[in-house]
Image (tube, rainbow, N blue to C red; front, top):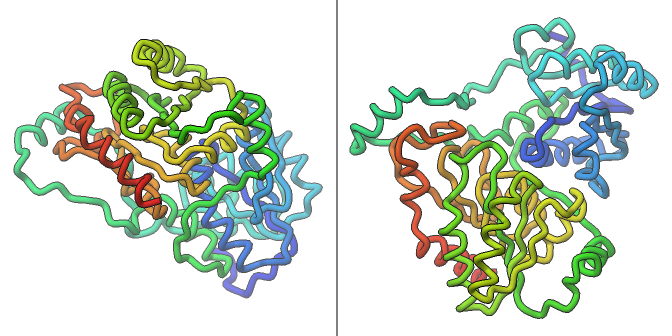
Length: 370
């Protein structure tokens, strides 16, 4: 453990996380870091696929990106030119700690984990309230399902992943109190996506729909229910829908688009057609986003777009948009949820227990509150 002497860094390197949702959840810690060191130059090291996320972000002065195939030694060599006083290592991987070491940062702060503590000058003990995300076995699921009357423990709000990153920033003296995640797009970016995707003439209220989830089918509410919700909400609001998703969601979005044409729904299918910045700008056009637990959910919440998020196999208490006033979480009372599995080994009750009517009410209620 390094000395507890006061830290007054001129240049801070922050090693960012590798997944979109996780990256969004680091923004409160970065904002607290900027609050503590308003004049310090803060550089974020990030995968190239996430570089656009940080454009126009007030907590960051500079990004350094690297490709998925770039070696740790090549990255470290580029970082040495930064002459960083401090490196804050947000991921828990050995590689991320080695990068900070090779960068030559005088102080290197990250969580204590096997195979990496040697490369840190301050190996921080995990928080006492941390809840480990662990997949349930089929036997555990069967046991829980057989005793549905047993009380179901809930993780405390302080167990949320946001606090892990805030706790690391607090080692540098930053305020550990949580903020809602924040991202930013410009008016010019919004106007550009309106023109590119022919949305400038859409006069109807725009709602977003994200029916996919990259992690696996256990995180996806049934597609036919999304379609039913879209029909009912359009009947009541005369809205237009924008479909979001990645290239791997083409089957799901294609099914929704086909059903929409039959039902005369106003649908704009943008799944797989936007860059990250364009996705963020289009989300800002939405009155609300109806979504599974996935990357666009985190983006929309951080952009202050009202979110209605459906959770089944995962835990909103640990990774959901619970710090945003405009977000609504929908989950069933299935005793085996969260299981953190990619596919349900039984009857998918955590998602099937969520009704169309309940989701419609939440979406309409979110819009009325706004």
